[in-house]
Image (cartoon, rainbow, N blue to C red; front, side):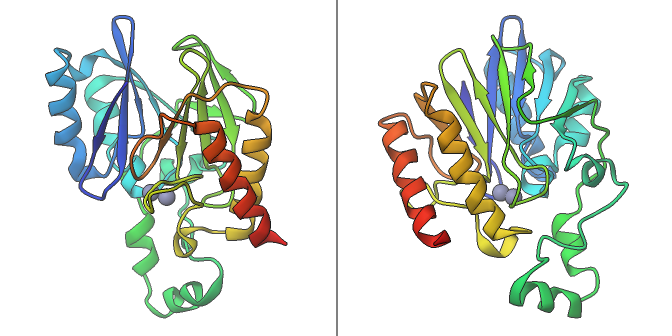
Length: 236
Ligand SMILES: [Zn+2]
Ligand SMILES: [Zn+2]
C-alpha cells in the first residue's frame, strides 16, 4: 500500500492487487500528475488501475477521478448517496448546509459550488453499507454519512486496513472528526464515528489510512477507541 499527498493536502492510496492497482481516492484534479508519477515509479501504468474507490465526492478526493478513470478505464466505485454529486446530476448546494458558514455561503452565489463541484465522473458501481467488494481479498463498505451524505470507509480484510476518507482525519496529531465547516451534518458525522468504531470492535484494525494526515499503524484500535470517547462526550 502506497500513499501520496496531493496539492490539497489530501491522501491518495495505491494498493497493489496482483497484476492490477486499486486507488483509494484520486486527489484533486491538479494532483493527477502526482498520482501518475507515483504509479509509474511503481513500474506500472495507469492502464493497470482496475478500480477507483472513492470515499466521498469532495473535489480534493474525487476531483481527479474523471481524468484517471478516462485514462485507465478503471471502474469507479462510490456510495450511492454521493453518486449524484459525482455524476454531475446534482451538486450539494453546499458543503455548508448548516451553521454560520452555510448562511455565509448563500450570500456568495456559486462560492460553495466552486468548492464542491468535481469534474463529473460516472459511478460504475454505486455502493451500499455492508457491501463487500470482491477485490483485494474482500473490501467492506462502511457507510458513515455526515461529512457528505455518501461518505464511506473501506475496510480491507487482508491486512486489516481501514481507509476512512474524511469520516476520520489525522491532521492534529491524533484522530479527529472532519472539519465542521465542510461537513453537511456535523452531528451526524459524530454519530457515524461512534457507529464505525463500534462496528470495528469485532474486527482487527492494524492500520488506519485517513483522508488527511499520516497513516496510523501503531495502536490503531486504542486510538479509535479514544476518538469514540471524545466524540461521545461532544454528543452528550
Ligand atoms: Zn471532504
Ligand atoms: Zn478532504
